Image (cartoon, rainbow, N blue to C red; front, side, top):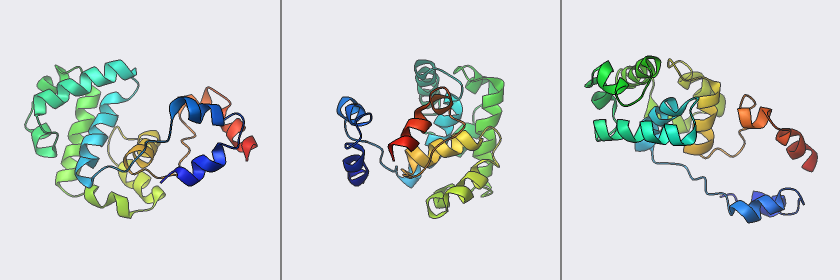
Length: 167
């Protein structure tokens, strides 16, 4: 899916070494049945280091066995809190579960929407902001033209300037 873009990027003397170092882009869209789990993971991972996020999410998966809206709502707030989630994140994943179950968020139809429509739908859920929605677009739906302008990695560096200049 990304071969044409990589071919062009390999011509750039600054990006070509990055492609050699990290290999081919491995982003692939996930199955619709994993959308809910990916969003729960995104909420669990917000503002945490990668290792801490992995640990907490693995505890959530162990508690729930299968990450579904019904399984989340079947657990007490304290059980979810005991996985390492903040009280706020517990309320966020429960809101996601409720909105999914009552079809306010038609999660299995997200891939049929435009980027902005997806962002608008997802940001109706407590705890999901534009950044989380953009991460979902990039890593769950493999949308190729997303640049999360609020991402710390982009803002902390001048990467976007270099990318722009490379064109």
